[in-house]
Length: 424
Image: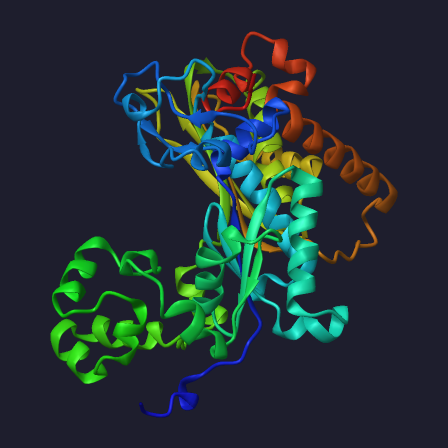
């Protein structure tokens, strides 16, 4: 076999997966243990053929697949059906990302999906005076203590091996953590069968490989790299590398695939015409919503855009933006800026659409107050907003509302119910 050392990376990569994420969130909301509760996330009111989005580890251990149809579930009266709440799952996901960012920089984080992420710990071992496994333990404990969610983690010298260590071993480990090095490939990866158990090999590729007599991962690793490339092209060569534990990608190389938002926005079409007085309530409610999303992901904004659409038969409306000297996540500052834009550009026509967008985002780790800002007042506002954020996170978006939400022209309660802002 040719020398593989030239291809090897030696990083400290951590791959974290939130266990049965949707179902676990639903259990947390109900004060239940997902490892002792038969709960599925599915809307059975639609039909018996509705897709089950997730099941608890309790049901998985009893052979219930995580993806199936409602009619395929066991006939068990004890099963709890939870209607999907995607907005709530996204909110929990943002909170988990917040935990990651308490340990590492955003540059060393790659969010792979709503429940999975890669963290490059290489530059943090000396800083924390801990091993990669010890840091992984700290992160998993923090996720559980703060959010009640159980996670599994794989540690490896590259993203691929961290992912394989997590998928193949960590999910069965009593500590929920597994670490692989290049020396572990032959013992831990090569015996794996069927081939589709390895990340990146689907059922169709497995069929093609089986026809070549390749049944175990090690069979592929020992096969001719050139032959695999001739038969399957670049994918075949990549498969040979992967089965030998080789992955040349770095987290920083994943920026083009990253799901990091470049802006946060919210818009709505109103059910009736609004005037300059009652539209202020709508703008205030929307600012509350979008700034909360800023804070959840530890961001500040410098550029604020307000869009107003008029009723049919009038002009189109306007979309104007302004850039602040200081980045901010303050609800009061952003609301005041929106009002200034409204006062300048509004033409006294009936309003049917409103949109607010926050862009030019920066991290919220550091902030330098200007001479013209009241630092004490802003700090008190931040503390209040953090408290309200936490209450809404635990008890739903409708648990804390402004008094204006009781006014006839308020839309916040209706919007929150539509996006899963209230749970039972």
